[in-house]
Length: 323
Ligand SMILES: O=C(O)CCC(=O)C(=O)O
Ligand SMILES: [Fe+2]
Image (tube, protein in one colour):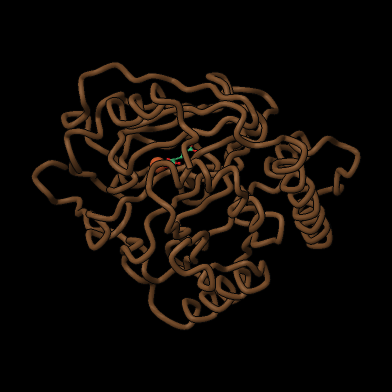
């Protein structure tokens, strides 16, 4: 099915990204996730209150102000409770994950898959690199724990750089959208147009995770991408991008970033579960049951809790590019 206009397709191919407006419906697609997040926060606040980490559950505050307040008072970033994916290390039997039926419906919503199909074809696999990010105001990010890209500014990288080399030839498409709207003030994404055409460049382990060293950044100026709720950003896995700081007082930039690829290609995170989201060749293979999806992540969590951390990284601090 053709969903992108010829101009949008041309931009995706020439610049490595395109923003498509009006793809998702704020009421039907996005509001159920926000309702889920309220429940997650209820659970977190009650647990922290019982543990005397906060003085109140702050039920009467609006969601974002409540989250900021609870993060600041508890000194915790709390992001993992809202995220879909497990963390890359230190998985425990009770590591929280957010694998609700509403999240599954959003991952498989036909309007999103139509868009994906237009770029990668009708055999669509949901890659397990999928996040719900609660990007907090900078003032509210606890610095005592480890850096977390779920709540903070994200440094320059290519998504290809943060998966294993076995997926270098997979056609993985990044699909990013915000539930709340993203702005320059609250930390929208920025991309370097055309950067995907140079191929994969070296990434170096740094305080904020894997990042492209300044010397290897393309000279072309970055383009910030403020987006409305319902708009969707599509990026290639080689497009160089980062996100800005959230400099607001109380806004949380809530966003999803998902990945889809042709079925049968490597995902680059073999320890995590994916699923067939659409198929015309083998409709029986499509996963339609949210409970089965939830179980796939829960089983993965159990497996990982009992073993050493799998490796998800190919880059080493000592490499010449990182000196
Ligand atoms: O949402 C962010 O701040 C960063 C997201 C990102 O790097 C991605 O979607 O690939
Ligand atoms: Fe990324």
